[in-house]
Amino acid sequence: MKTSEYLEKKRINVLGYPVDVVDKERSLEIVKENIKNNKQLHIITLNPEMIINAQKNEELSNAIYNSELVIPDGSGILLAFIIKGIKSLNTVPGIELAEDTIEYCSENQLEIALLGATEEVSLAVKERLENKYPGIKIVYRANGYFTEEENIAKNIAAKTPRLLLVALGVPKQEIWIHRNKNLFPNTIIIGVGGSFDVWSGKVKRAPAFFRTLKIEWLYRLVKEPFRAKRILFALPYYTIQLLFDSLRSLLSIKMALFN
Ligand code: UDP
Image (cartoon, rainbow, N blue to C red; front, side, top):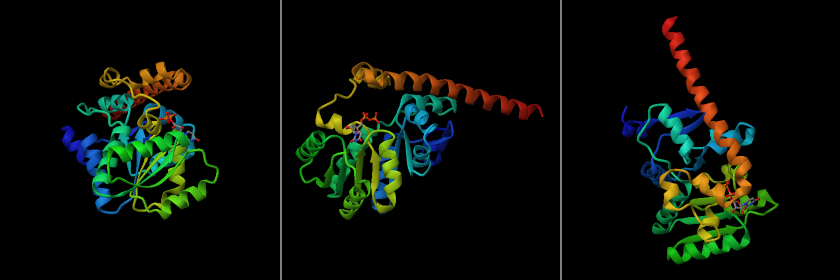
């Protein structure tokens, strides 16, 4: 099957979690279709670390199962695609899909809400976006260090944003979205992790060299060594599970052929 045919209809299973076989263009098309049809779309930006995290966290798992679009953000997910015979896809970095969606919303005067990061970062992001996209409608902004979860959700919902970006880190943002998504029936909701830190200028995204080789995680590891324990455990553990999983599938095909 050609990649384009996969793009039309495929959602595959990676270690028990769904992933949509989409590239960046198709992801943005899906976003625009859902905006036009006034539909809700919770987008999960899946990477190996999140899968390993979800295996121990039922709420995160449920958030992934119940999301409407799961994009392959992370080269480990591409490895799973390759094992399944889908070769010509690229990762869809969540930060880039979020940027494209912001641009589309500002061109169409659609309301945007920003939740997450520190107060300083949150203010800087609002200011930078307003400078970059004159006419952008940021109807709500709050930092991610709140205590009254329910009030925050209701306050955002009262502004009926068409795009809600939640930057609380994994798994907090996915769980917050999953718990509160019933308040946002017509909203595109994306958990964007550290993207606000990047947009504010506080943190740099990995240079092109790391992005081309699809080893952004290595750059993050060097720049933020406190992530070492998480990344250095999750990546090999994920790869081993993936290889065992494909071996198991191969064996069961062979057994079926010989029976
Ligand atoms: N954050 C937040 N509230 C919290 C914890 C984290 O707003 O209670 C923010 C934090 O300031 C940062 C982002 O969430 O901007 C997490 O970024 P990180 O790069 O750690 O996310 P990841 O992509 O690794 O999940």
